[in-house]
Amino acid sequence: MIEIAAMIALGAASLAVLLNLYRLLAGPGIADRILALDTLTINAIALVVIFGILFGTGMYFEVALLFAMVGFLGTVALCKYLLRGNVIE
Amino acid sequence: MLLMAELVIAAFILGGAFFLLVGSFGLAKLPDTMRRLHGPTKSTTLGIGCLLIASMIHFLAERGAPSVHELLITLFLFLTAPVSAHMIAKAHILLDRPARRALPDTGQGDGWATLAAPSRTAGETAGRTRQRAV
Image (cartoon, rainbow over all chains, first blue to last red; front, side, top):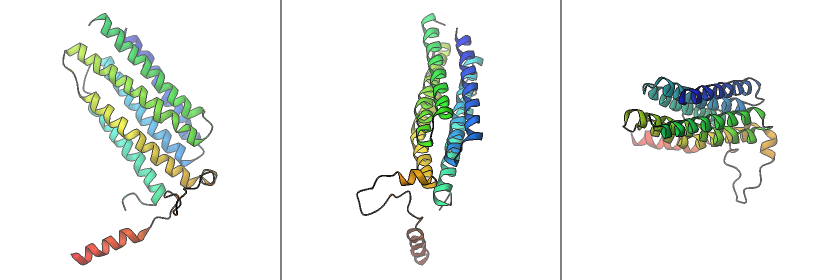
């Protein structure tokens, strides 16, 4: 049962990644693209977590944690650059 | 594994997948940036929280020992999602002219801090005094 649910969740997360890629390419503003990148990172974390459940290994949690940290740092750095013209003042 | 645990895990996985999909659909479908912020910040965060809870119950039922990694990831994501949404909204207000015009008055002497020019004075004077002290 868990396998079937995980397969459905994999399909849904992949569809979500495709929708994010559409917004990343088509987004009219820079803020839209940054938001799409942020959401793309969260969806990648979801995919990693589902694969961890499916394969039954706890090896993927470090990957997910690193994805979360790098995604947050990237979003904040891009926004900070847009807001202040500089990342570290 | 217990049937009950399997049912709960499958329900959490399906709920998480649904909310992930709703968040990304909102990001792709909603008409302007401020409304598009709602999908990823609320729905996607809830979805990833559900998935991580499912993962936690799964490893608890499989190995008999609770795993704390998921709690760490959940805490980090739930703390950082509002911050990044706030930063993106500020950048959008600064860059988008109609959004800037639609802002209400602050009701105080100062205007919106987001729109103020980056003030060099505070940082430079601090640097200067620090240099003098050295």
